[in-house]
Each structure stands twice: as structure tokens, then as C-alpha cells.
Picture 1 (cartoon, rainbow, N blue to C red):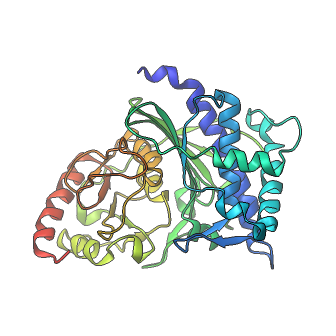
Picture 2 (tube, one colour):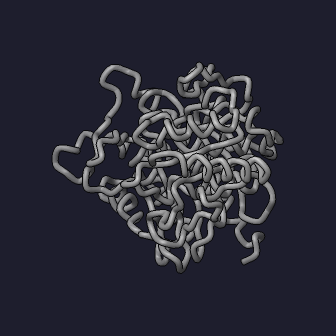
Length: 373
């Protein structure tokens, strides 16, 4: 399929992620007011906020308006079960308010808006439309409404991630990173702490949206600006560092999500001197695409299955910016098997370039033999 024919898709995806990111910024600001935020808990104990449901509703509604809802397939993280319970009326009301406030601004982003505010049933319908399971055939939009919910709740890094997969291949990816500053000098890494934004979390001018089309050889970044769509975008390029000694390695903040001991041993064996950059969410991919870090490694516990919405958008952006993403065996990630990345060899390794990637794959093989993983 020709890259050029995706113009409407990439344009709509970028605009709706800008709109969704603005909703997140407003909800995150309210979270830090007394009694301001609705945070519920999913079965896996991760907090789900108004933002998760709100973003899913907005993206689903806009995609259905632009592309029609007949053959629209959306794979996304949230379902309406928690929202449909009688005890969730307050949460549903908060989601409705956030969605309608955001959609009223849709024309500023070049997007359609509803004739009148959406009612609760329409919002539930939009959220539950995202019930596809993907697979090897056809076109599937893949959405993680708020990736890194814990980072979101703590006023830290998180991402809105939207990708389009066709016949198992990722065609485009968009990452909204509302707390990831456009300028690198606004970042700090306090030793072993999670990456911080020095600026006030939630101030929109400090965020960005990154996007790429498969096969274009280009990845782009736009600033997130309050109440509108930016005129300009800048090209992203991965770092040229190819010596592990000089590399900055990203890893998840949460220990449950990745084996920190193994990655620490691996980094040590390669002579990595810098402290790991611990980052919530797919912002790790953003850091590599932009050259703020060189390596992202994730070795999950054996019982954990990686989901496509946690990687699809980030992978295509890193690749088009000049980086490499594979499993630990050096194979491309397989997005054709439904909701999960099946057949993953041990873990995921994203690098700023081929040379560094080969060194790390080699080190993984050597370390794996001697570890008890």
C-alpha cells in the first residue's frame, strides 16, 4: 500500500491526539485539586481516570465521524463495564463533561464536533465501539488512551498512543506526550528517579505530539499548544551514539513491568556508565526517537503478555526516526496476532541505531546464558 494514500488517516490521527491530549491536561490539573479527580480501579489494580474513558470516547467518536462506523475497527484498552455500574454515575458524569468540553473545541483542531453535546448513552456507545481484537487481516486502529496511568496520576510522564495497523503491519503511529517538553533542556533525571519535567506539569506549551508514517523515513514532532493546532512540525532524529558506554538506557519505572536486575546486569556488562532513565509509559519510545536516550529494554516477567497498544505507535515512530526495534532475538515485533504480541523472544529492545542494537542483542545472549531468568 502506498504511503501517500494515508494522508487523511495521519492527519486525522494527529489532530485527534492533540485534542485528546488537551483533555488529559485539563483532567490532570483537576486531579491535584482536593476531591477533584475520579480515579477508579481496574481488576489489575491500575487506576483508571476520567482521562482514560474520555480519550477513548473522543478518539472513537472522531474516527467514526471521519471514516464512518460501518467497518471501523478499534482495539483499545478500556471497556464500559466499570462505567455502566450504578455506583459509577459520578464518574460517568465527569467523563461526559470532559468529553463534551473537549469536543466543543474540536473545530480549533480541524475536526468535526457534535451538533449538540453527547449524552451518556452516546459516550458509552463510543467507548464500547473500541471492542475489536485486531488480527492478521483488515485495518485496525489501536489506541491506548492514557499509557502510563500511574505517571498520569502522579503528574509525571504519560502518553496518548494511537496507531493504524493493516494486515498485521503498523502503518502509522501518533504519540501525545503532554508532559514531555519540546526542548530537551527542560528534562531532568534525578539519579535513579523517574524522568521529570522541570516545568510545571500540565502546562500545555511544554508538551508535544510525535508521529510517523511507515516507510516515509521521517518522524515529526509538534508542540502541544493550548486550544488549537500548531502550524509547524520539526523532524525527529535518533542519537548517533553507538557505544554502549556512552548510551542512556530507558527502563520502566514499575518493577512489576520489567526485570530491573537483569537490565542492570546487562548494562553493567556492556560498561554503561549513566544511570538508567526510568520513564513511565511509551514516552520511552519518544525519548529514543528524539535522541534523548539511546536504548529501551524491557524484559517482563514470564507470565506477563505485552499488548499491541503499548508498543505499536512508539515502534513506528522510532523506526522512521532512524532507530531499530525488535524482540531480544532480533526479530521484528508481530502485530498480527490480536491484542497481544505473541511469540516474543524474551523481551523488547529499542535502539537508536543498528550498530548499538547488534551490540545489545549480543550482550543479551551472553548475559542470558549466565542469568537465572
